[in-house]
Length: 327
Image (cartoon, rainbow, N blue to C red; front, side, top):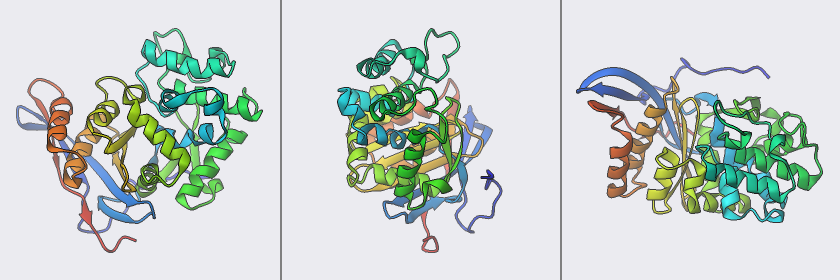
């Protein structure tokens, strides 16, 4: 299928994108434009800023949904992965020794060698176990071993594992998996190009408690946020401080997705120029507007993520708005 982009596409009037300004001693130095959408589990766009149909690759925010087959196949239970293993399957981790050990445990329980991982070995590292996606890849391989699928080709889009993932994601979005647009992610696995509203819909499902596989994965992420990203990283700090109220999973190139636990609501954010600092600033700005976190938690996170350096500050303008014209 032909990939396309909606950058520059027409937007409904009156709901501009958010803006993030990097201020140096109070003077604007850089500006980022950001789109955001909030959806419920029925796929309705409840609130937006900018264009909810903005197309982008979901990148690593897809990981909880790629891990569904790890759970549903019985591979997670067969290997005794537990919540720590499930959290690792969803992780974009820091590559620490403890992270690498958790990924190794998934493989070891299925009698799979680390050399069979097809994610790259990071520069300066000794093993692909240290790659930030090693938990996802370990879960992929373990699932293939459980279902007697080929291990060597597990990243190919036509592999039974990847086809099953596409089918499951398509079911959540209410469309055939064959219609989903795929491309190769940096770790070698397929990722998807989706409208922002569909990313928000996926995360509404993640928090809805209506899908047993996703319920287990979401609980694991909340139980072990330190495995999902790492100390000092946004997803870990948000979930660790969020009193079980939010699930957070970012992706490269300015993607940030958040679930409101128990309410079946999802928030998806895309920074046009891909800046990580902007997506984190917007996430906190919108979480405050949505009242999904306590004021004390927000204040702690703002101190950590909105002051990137001496004399520097990130300032967000704009807001989510209701729009009855959006279905």
